Length: 141
Image (tube, rainbow, N blue to C red; front, side, top):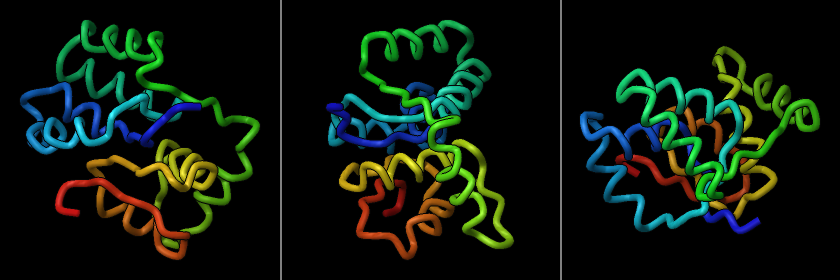
């Protein structure tokens, strides 16, 4: 696989939606994390919702085009990696870890040299504690 970064849904939504408060950050960040980008099906679902809600179905179709062209690569993790996803969810007492984030952390464990690009700095800073050195690319980091 030739992926160069793991991406979260908020990054894509901010990059594509000029009205997003983090659009300027995402647009400035994108050239430094050239694709193809790696993500998971949970994030694709979130991206489709965020883009469709903010920009309409044409943006969702553009997302599917990016997937078809291999610019965004989505790995299928369930059921093969469900044990890792479950362990990630159970790892944090008192914190709800959504399915997409747990899947991204599973991807990061499999590809620890790839940076994680997200707008969700608070959660991912927690998820990365106690792991080998990983690069987090997020607003304010």
